[in-house]
Image (cartoon, rainbow, N blue to C red; front, side, top):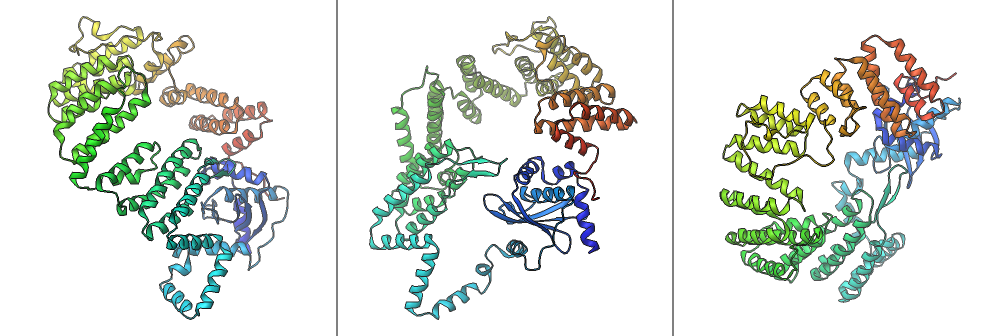
Length: 635
């Protein structure tokens, strides 16, 4: 008994911070919602002080929560997540609610169904989810049992199982159709079944613990039966339906890839059917490739692996010819701003290159890349091939041509080409040119990483002090570095960048970032204080990062910045914003504690409470900051 009281009292010491540390804020929010919705029932405690209850989710789950040696919860549940889930959080909160209202928690009986279910769960974890099937003698025991039955008894047993499990009855009917040779009717029905399953998109609302994930396990089983009985071609027919219907369904689903995973689980059966089918080698490759080209959601990754396997060169040669012919038949995308058409053509040409490589026809690849570059803007792929072949001059020529062609319509491609030219200069160890290109990239898009890259390259030619000063001058005044008389780096012979039309100098956000990078807190504050004057120069300044950078140099400023950031979040009146605000309040409190300003910190928190007293969730979070338990002790 003393042990029980000791463990249960540990739950009463829990703060909201403790729960968030245990299960994470999202899981805690979901568990809290479950408890408030009254989903926890029949709460009880065990002899050793653990909590046990039923929790209603998509099914009814048995959940048990213990306290570990540190007083933190540890839960096990019959739900799919098993450990430290929202159901466990809901049980703890239900217990604390009862403590709050002085309501007794009864003791669970020795034969409590929930404890038995949870014990089974433990055994499943240790020896597998089917104890009988995983037993070393299971097969022999089942054989002995069945051999002891007469034919009539076996038939009766099958009928009983079919009556109890409809899927067995359907499986038997399917097998009868296959054996009778009537596979067409079965294929028609399965195709309709795939369409029916694919008609409803998957969705998940993780906050409410609700959702729908299409179940393709039955389809996979039926495909396996068809394949086992020697009907590989029929499986491919259904595989095509699966790819078409499934791709559309995944596109419409909102479930973080769960629907895609269900469909992808069927694809190994399709690959095996492809191997066993009556198609010739080239047609097999073509079938797999068509499915991959139709798939935009990585459902057919198993088929991609099939296309990277070893296949006869003769098959690859024939496939390469087919793909080149398909490229010739496609309407040219040249002069059109149709991204999807260019993307589709690039995918097709990419697989044509793959086929040429596997066929031993590498000498045709660069000419194909040249033709495609002008059609779709795929200059980067061409340059990569030329560099790999050691043809640097040709690569540079195509880089300059590609930059001119893409700088306005596709600036991302032009940026990639500049990066490739810089890579060539690195291979040539032309460090002045590398440094000059890095400086231009910094002006195009200032960032701390670009500044660091400039420093590394310019230091190789002893030019960094001057380059650094001119880059900072650019951020302050908009003066282009290479227009200064004593600029120490060569011309790049690329289209030099100019300040953007929306740039207003000084670029305060970038200057703050450089000051943080160089660990100059006084400069950080100098430019941070300009924000109110130069609002147009503010590009994504992170107040938390500023406070962190200056908290040793100017602790009072850091505290003020963190407090202001927290107060802006609290003003959003959202629980998630309160939780984020607590992060910054902790940082402010930590600095004040080191400065021995406990009285000022307590006053600040008291003022926050008085201002926002109606915000119950915020009060709970402030309790956590002060280490207050979720509920008070028993009276």
